[in-house]
Image 1 (cartoon, rainbow, N blue to C red):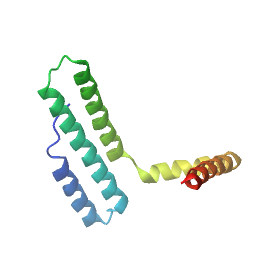
Image 2 (cartoon, one colour):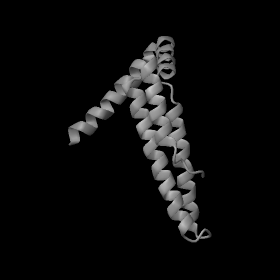
Image 3 (tube, helix red, strand yellow):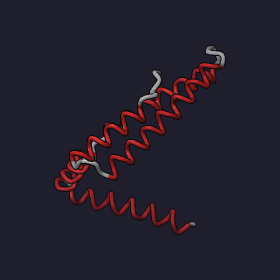
Length: 117
């Protein structure tokens, strides 16, 4: 796992570049904030496990979790909302019946969860 001290600075530079080009969106800012937080947690976990005995089972789990968090942060940073939106719209257009059933099922599940509270 490598250290990501420059992640916040890179994010701020990217955000300022996007503002100049008119491409900055609230979604991009939230996406970068979440990715930065995941990187920070991954770095902290990695440092904590590096300070402990590297051979213990818990240490190995901590290192693995740190790697997964770092990979998750990169996936979030690379997520393209427009592409996901286009794919969802294409799927709905090709499978309207199945899409309605899925949406209805999700609605029923959310309704049941909210009703219990």
